[in-house]
Image (cartoon, rainbow, N blue to C red; front, side):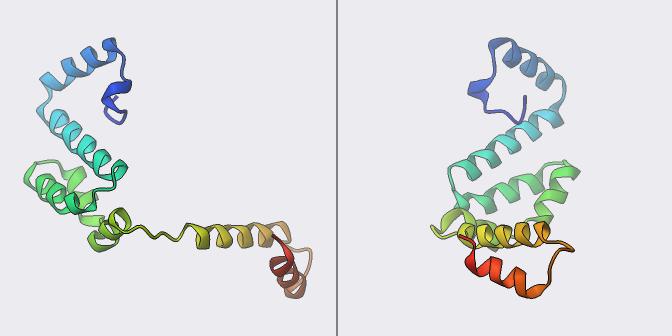
Length: 120
């Protein structure tokens, strides 16, 4: 229920979640951080990432500290703020990997090269 958007929860789920969060302050803090991080990702607000990381460090949530330490700030901020992405390149890489897997043990490099160049 924490990972879902609050608007998608039924009334019963909202009441159940609220009852749980009242009794566990750590889970309440975690819920706030998860939802704000989801908002940063879905609305592509990379400029808010540093603020979120500082808020996570200020809470006593070791699991989130590990996540925050593993985030490459510059890369994530760039991914969330710049209009460019490497989706097309990744698509070609996946296509070549699929062709290679399909041909495993069947033919040599020359046929793989021909299939990669002719496949569209």
